[in-house]
Length: 245
Image 1 (tube, rainbow, N blue to C red):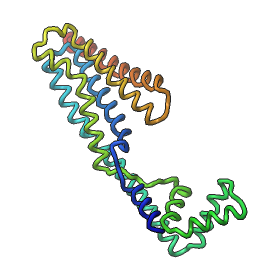
Image 2 (image 1 turned 120 degrees about the horizontal axis):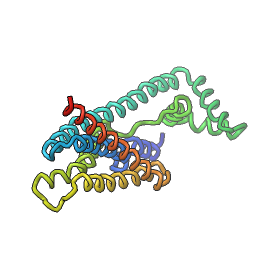
Image 3 (image 1 turned 135 degrees about the horizontal axis):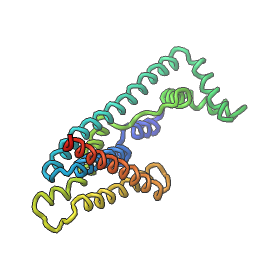
Image 4 (image 1 turned 60 degrees about the horizontal axis):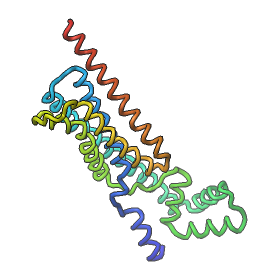
């Protein structure tokens, strides 16, 4: 591998920026918003006062946020460990049974439609570069690409977005608890600000997945509304059962 190729390879597989973690931010934020909104809706349906709703919401926010961040950390860590495991296997194969590994590269590109001299030239170029050779084997044989993300960073971004978006449904209740009299309908305002947060999350999700912004927003709002509606009526039902028992 020449110096330029080595530098590009290293930069591609080690560099990270905030954009690499948009997926963690979106799904962490959405889960945080839905979870906290559902807690708030359920507590509202049970006619709890603002102080109780704030306590339940914050406790849930921290506990579930930590749980989800640990899940994100373990997921990225598992992907990285799996890649490294198979990478060691392929490195051993390239060093000890190169002819067999060369035939596998040839088969991979044959299945992609290359034939004759073009196929031979591609195989020759790839197998002349050990790191490129192993990388192509990982993609072609195991459908694996190197995981650039740091597991710790993935967990942190998930936790941060969970807290940021998940805190939004609690804000109107915090203001109401502080005595802001203009908040005549706290839960209605919570629905409004949470819906705005879901719209932003839906737009970012559409950008990441290159899908329709309209449908991403509709889907996000629908899922959030479904979770809140279920929680609200469950809270209301349980209150009636407990009070009438």
